Length: 144
Image (cartoon, rainbow, N blue to C red; front, side, top):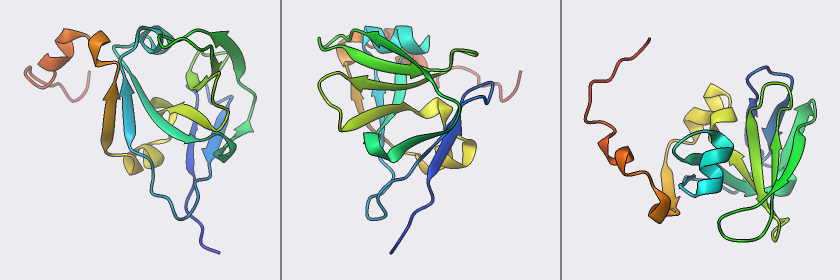
């Protein structure tokens, strides 16, 4: 039976780690950028960078994330998992769909993140911050 290398990741304090075992016949999902208000607040950023994966494929290997039940811009409640110690957001899961889970790409280990190099979709564009269009027009400093 063919297998693929799982995607792996964890939180900032590394008290919680995970792996995503994708079916061997499926490529790594493309990144989805979400500009909705609830994702902005959840991630503390201008948008959320996500991978949509089968819920059964995600396994927390160390620690257990805390669950927060919140709301979304589209209506149904959203289950959100995060590290209670460092605050790192891991997932969002629409309350009306137990089949999928939305994984935050910033939590992926570097090797796994490099495997997810293509943006496939941006959603909630009407909520996109207009200043995002300026990215790439200014000087870029590689380290601070």
